[in-house]
Amino acid sequence: MNTKSRLVPLLLAVAVVVGILIGTFYANHFSGNRLSIINTGSNKLNYLLQIIDNNYVDTVNVNELVEEAMPVLLSELDPHSSYIPASEAEETSEELKGSFSGIGVRFTVQKDTVNVMNVIKGGPSEKVGILAGDRIVAADDSTLIGMENREIMKRLRGPKNSNVKLTIVRNGHRQPLTFTVVRGDVPVESVDSYFMLNDRTGYISIESFGENTYPEMLVALARLSMQGMKDLIIDLRGNRGGYMQTAIMMVNEFLPGGQLVVYTEGRHSEREEYRTDGRGTFQQLPLIVLVDEGSASASEIFAGAIQDNDRGTIIGRRSFGKGLVQQPIEFKDGSCVRLTIARYYTPAGRCIQKPYEKGHGEEYENDLIMRYERGEFFSADSIHQQGPEYKTALGRTVYGGGGIMPDIFIPEDTTLYTSYFKEAQWSGLTIQFAFLYTDQNREQLNSFGSVDEMENWLRKQNLLEKFARYGEEHGLRRRNLMLQRSAPLFERSLISNIIYNAQDQAWRLQFLSKEDPAVQRALQLMKEGKSVPEAPAEEKGKDTKTAALDLQGIGEARPAVLNLHLAHLTA
Image: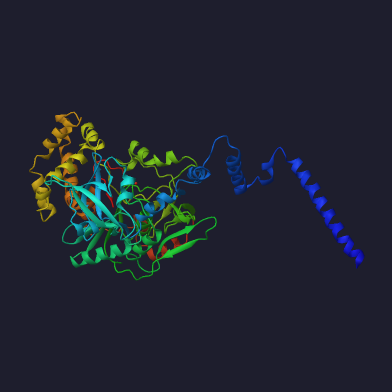
């Protein structure tokens, strides 16, 4: 026992010496290339940051360096994987949430000043007496004049039940007015408009697919049904998408039970199918869906499910082409990564993601401009379908690899377009004039009880001449021949913006729908009872239900050219 006791310290000492010798050997062996022992993955990146932090010649904020590197790293994956800093994460997600905390106004910035366009009914600002047309010049003694939009939003939004003191300049009052507003919940409505186009056709415009879009749609459908709706047009033009699950629930209202809506699949995500449950209330309602190049993501899931199941007709122009599924992954600091984890496929098996090259995000973003330049907005013949062919339930041919191609193409009408009108639009002068005119005639405009009344009055106000003078005063050289040629476009733009400023988007869309070629074509089809596509001649007479069963399980944003309106923010 004594011998063993004496050997233990000796053995420990030998082990320590051997450890030192081995450590010295490896240290000397790799002294010129320390990174080689951690030459893989995240360890390498972490070690690089340590080297920079410890040895770089100047002081470096490593956190800022990481924030700048994250978007660049993700951009090398695909166009839709993205990093959202903590400072922007909440603002980015608010659009799809049902509400946010703010003062309850829609505003625009004109000449460096916050101008209230609309006061949200029942919101905090209405309760204290703020009116459309008011100028908000300060919040809590901090001037808002000349401030960037994002900073203005930070000043006006805030925690629920918190106070903000607003300084208001109002027409007819010599001195500024002061209001203390208690911030509260401000609803974010994604079903921005719904109304009857005639005595039987309902119209619903959906801005995005958010948390509350499905119940909002059900409310719209119920109210339109009470007004005698017998058929329906759903407008998804300019709808950039949102939550996939929301689109699935909405499609479920219109399809019979057991129909495939969409399925997803990825390298680490097994195929997952989403089918209808047969509980939809409007399975027999004649349906037409409007899309354009601004319709993306969840919009394309909705349109693709309707098209592939031959449930209704798709009218418009080729959609954006986003077929990638992002999963949000949050960090402890509030920042977020939206990582592409799968692709989604329409019922016929097509992935409508348009082609992209990793690391070439600029080309991807410019795709819509390239479509415009090659004439795709004006002629269906300019659209080159390069993706694989698939068949709908009726055997109609559809294509993958680049958006949803509508069943009926509606070109952009540029017959009355002139360089004078283009300059007026893109300079923002038509928008500025419309806001100024609304502000000067707000009492009169508020007196009308319908869109038609307001339109009739505006058409008698010589808006074209008034705008031409305003344009000259602000650097737009008058061109009488072009002014007359584009007169219908000018009137349409000016009147629609004035209606929007004085009332809301629903009134504006009611006015525009009268001359909207996509809406008018949809109404024609409804009148003729042709909202449901027909099978190709060679497929007629076949059992279409069998064809549908055979197909199940097959694997695999609009530029505002003629209809620009006043962009606004909500606080």
